[in-house]
Image 1 (spheres, rainbow, N blue to C red):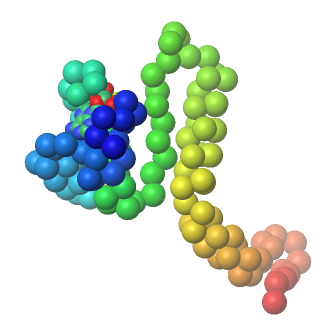
Image 2: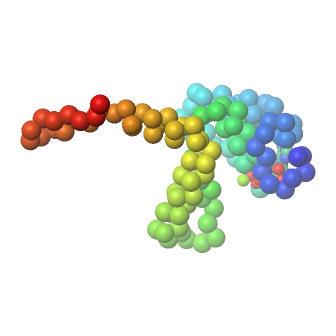
Image 3: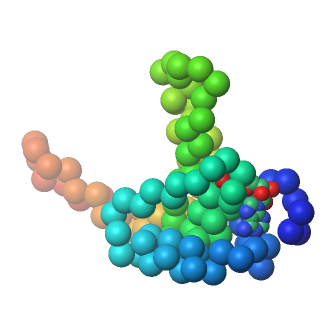
Length: 118
Ligand SMILES: Nc1ncnc2c1ncn2[C@@H]1O[C@H](COP(=O)(O)OP(=O)(O)O)[C@@H](O)[C@H]1O
Ligand SMILES: [Mg+2]
């Protein structure tokens, strides 16, 4: 919805950012670090969210705006929320990791050589 006050996440809700969206998608694919600069409320977060969704790479979103100087617990909480959001958005990845781990053949190194699994 175009007039939603929240940042947009879908391409069809993003207005008049074709060039910026193309540049950002190219940057995500080809560059290591990308900085999106602009005044507040001009659509940076929306542009970034749409680009990430369009590219389809897995990502962890961390909003590092703090009211004051962050304490260690604030940083831990930030990462926890980022990972929780990632896991909620990537259930298929989690299932693939779980599946891969279930098929790992464990080999103990040191002491008596030993294998277990199927
Ligand atoms: N190009 C755009 N298309 C659609 N909505 C936009 C656009 N630019 C800004 N907005 C809207 O304006 C508000 C601020 O956008 P946001 O992405 O949070 O900006 P920023 O991160 O630069 O502060 C949100 O309601 C967002 O949906
Ligand atoms: Mg923002």
